[in-house]
Image 1 (cartoon, rainbow, N blue to C red):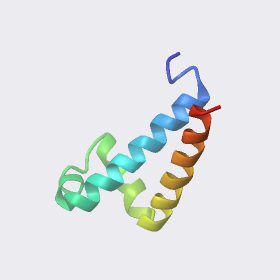
Image 2 (cartoon, rainbow, N blue to C red):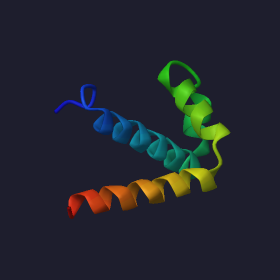
Image 3 (cartoon, rainbow, N blue to C red):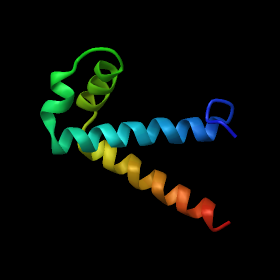
Image 4 (cartoon, helix red, strand yellow):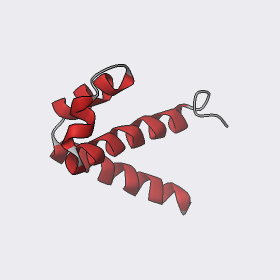
Length: 72
């Protein structure tokens, strides 16, 4: 089912996008800082306003929840 019609899939995609941007920013800070136009400005602001600890907590909770769903 497409992610747009399924809320849980849409939420999963959004969270994974945030985690990916946070990871890219931690590895290569200049990639997101250099391109501040379009969609990248939204992702840059999202990641820069959140602390890495909050992102790691959300990632851990998400992975635990996702792991439990796989085995049910």
